[in-house]
Image: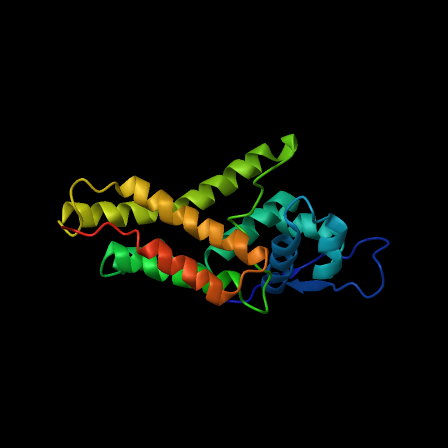
Length: 209
């Protein structure tokens, strides 16, 4: 990925030691870690500027607003996940779901990252002024479920699953399992314990009779 450097205009009264330029990629990474650990409403502009190393006017100039920065961070975070194209390319819907769960367990238990999934736990409860942003995060959460549903429906059409199989229901079930895995990771569940959850969930797969 190309590293972009953005020129920041000098500001009156800027604290000594502030950078005159900043690396946008590094800024997004710093903001990502803050939002991931503390949630959108738990991160102040002061915390963001301190972590990134720029003054508040420069942050607004670069990202428009705190919400604009958060939306860009969410886009960056989603790009780190298991993509819709990867799901579509799996040999079967069962393989897609198995790989999604495995990927998810690894992602929410990385030692160098905050526990849990930033999107799964993002703005589940929000103050009235953040209703639209919360709706945006709900749409982001839905993307994985929709991709899995499409893959399941393809297998149903191709006869790999019974015609009576409920693609929408299965997609929602396994998305619910994945989101529950994220919560359990935040509460301290180990990778081994979460792998056992995945094994149990996969045993619920409808077999073609």
